[in-house]
Image (cartoon, rainbow, N blue to C red):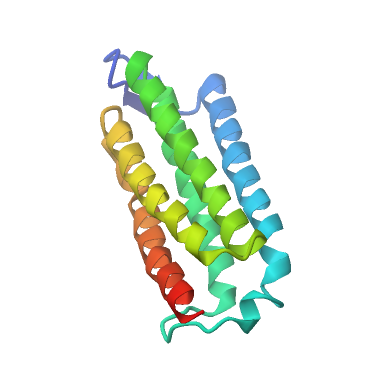
Length: 171
């Protein structure tokens, strides 16, 4: 299985050893962020979060784990594709945008669940939405499929923003 590199015009094998090592690194980085976010989130779910007033559209708690697992996997694969296909300043911009959104993603868990600060988390998630859009834009300069792989993440974070705002308002 191969693809044409956006920058070099040369065929790129997705199964080459270097490519698979990059995939492993992307998976480790993304799921390390997931673990860190979960570490800050899980202790507050049965205690602080359970006591909050929530809007009628709040999903059941069990849905968040599978959704986030899929989203982190999509993020990892999207960044892997960009890392393999990209070069030079375009890759640097994409990597920076990706890192910023990942930091904001983890920070949201710390603010909302760790510090019990939905208002601060709302500011963070607004920045996260912008960072995801910037990441998608940077990815699209290298690989449009990678950019579109982040669309479900953008949609979920947009929904989470409304949920965050509602919880902040109700409490």
